Length: 104
Ligand code: HEC
Image 1: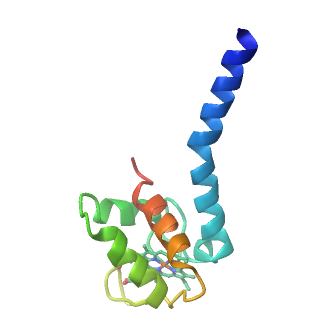
Image 2: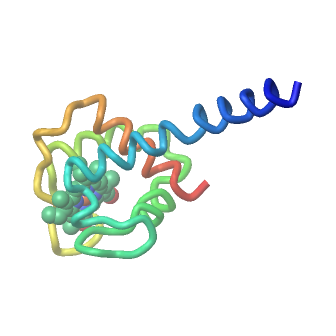
């Protein structure tokens, strides 16, 4: 019984944390983390600030996926983000979703 319940617990932990690891990995792999950090400004705004800014906006994911791929500036300051055109749509969406969920 004890073994079964610890297996279930382990299974739950994996299913909860796996998407977070995957998202972080996508962010590192696409060098997002070179300009962004979770809770402090680097070259670009922190992910927590981004999450706070777009909180409650249902079209934020689509809008930010486009921005991540194409790049652009003027929202957070004078420094623009270069386009990240090597990231796939699916990966961009996963990362943006992860960013927007980051201060829940
Ligand atoms: C060379 C530095 C750099 C890299 C690499 C970079 N960013 Fe950015 N990012 C910025 C800057 C600067 C801004 C602010 C742009 C602005 O003010 O509109 C920004 C803004 C953003 C925003 C908010 C956009 C908005 O309009 O509010 C998101 C989301 C984002 N970045 C995600 C990513 C993701 C995901 C990656 C990796 C695929 C990435 N960034 C890679 C510099 C970078």
